[in-house]
Each structure stands twice: as structure tokens, then as C-alpha cells.
Image (cartoon, rainbow, N blue to C red; front, side, top):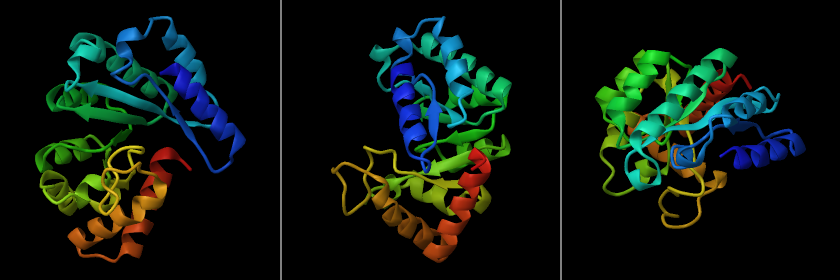
Length: 214
């Protein structure tokens, strides 16, 4: 929401090692007002803001917001990101087809975070010039798709993430996730890819700096 975006920006203004994103999440889109788009535009122009997000589609909890409203706000925010030359952080839950369609239409820079699609979808995302964010799910015992994606995604399109406070990796599953746990995600992805952890961390850090212009 815009309220939480303002709090994120306040943190970024207080701590020089923090950057912020501003956007309206699909779960909050039902309560969003059209006039909030202009406030969002102003927030995104703040120097601490490096992305429009988290935005996207979530068809798992449709009661929170109708699909058409979600698509409306995703489309408006994708257009805003392109206008301001900012990347997007995309939320996609059980909405792969519509997500890809909107991304292909607007062609923003950005990342599909907490990626849950197939290898085929990953390739479409990469073809659009975007990045793929993977988190603690790759460490889960029954993880299949995230492991397949972790093995196949091009090195220069892979990002590590926490999805804090959710998706804590093994051995912390079920606990509150934070950035201290990203090393466990990195270790598992490095194992999947057959590279050293140091190599993986260097590549994904470079990718993050490039995407968010850090």
C-alpha cells in the first residue's frame, strides 16, 4: 500500500544501506483509489526508491480483490514504471498467463519475485529481458519446479531473495525469515547449479546492482 511504501522510504532515508520500492500490491488493490496513482508517481520519484513494487496478480485469494481490478492496477503501475524508467518487482500467484500477457504488453525492466512458474515460463520471462527471483522454497523437501528453474535460469538473470517474513529456508522453515538466512538459499542453489557459493553470490549481487542501479 502507499502507507507501507511511505514507511519503507522513511527507513531508506534513515539508513543509507537501504533502498525502497513503492507500489500497490494486488491484495491491496481493491481498496486503492484512482487518485492514489499520482501520489505513487511522486513517491517513485524519491531518490531512495529504486523500483515500483511489489505489484502484480494474486488469484489465490480472489476474495481480497477481483481479478479485473488487480489487472487494472498492475497495468497502470507497469505503465508508470516504464514512464519513470524504473524496474518492477512482480508478484505472480496462480496468475501466470495474465502476468506474462501484461509483461509482454508493457515490456518493463524488473524481476518476477518468489518465482513459482515452470522452466518454460522462466524462459519467457528471460526472453522479455527480466530477472527471476528465487528464495527459500528451493530448500524445501518437496520442491520441484523451483529446483528445476534454479538449474536452468541463466546466471545473469538470477536474483536471490528472502520474501521476508515468509518462506524461511530449511533449517528455519516455519520461522520468521530475514536476510541473515539468504546464505542457506544461496548454498542450495549453488549445489543445484554445481558452482561455488562464492561464485553464485558474486553473480547474483552483480545482477541486483545492475537491475536496481545500485
